[in-house]
Image (tube, rainbow, N blue to C red; front, side):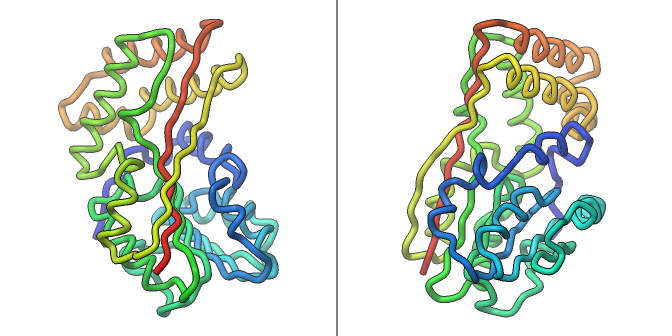
Length: 264
């Protein structure tokens, strides 16, 4: 099965991915890790979370997979734990692993881009060992909040939902994780939530700047135009609104994530 990745892999997207760490993106999982566990990181991107998790389960074997070969090549190049961590191109719907191969299967911001997230969770369940855990964290775009109010940022959020719907993906995946895991056959699921908050000058500039770039230069822009949802002029206006938001001294942005720890 081939799904369309709504973000693509433009530098502005990878800029966001490289910022992610185990602390800021997988805190709900960390108390459940221990030395010697074998871990699979599904949709690992540039591998920053992967190698952070690897440090916590060392000397356990860690595998990071992603559908994009160029992203995996970059992760391999940056990997400083080559004796412990292996990166490979992989398919979440058909994992290259035997049943019960891993103690932990982790996915961060992956299921929201899939046309069949329940099928993917079933496959993750297949490769986790008895007593192991499948951990997933997904954002919920409808629940994002910001100040000051901005009709153009509202339009950005509406457009993002339109693009993801065209890709048969779920932008509000965070709120559905619990139900998806139950439908995938898990009998013991703990659901939590957490946020990223951007409310100081440095983080506002970073978040607003990367989204301004993504709106005009990433697959977001390409798909918005290709699907007949927007045009270059509107995208330029939305990008300018992101930069203007970042300059406001009272600007505040919160990104809500749903999380699950699924067993059984």
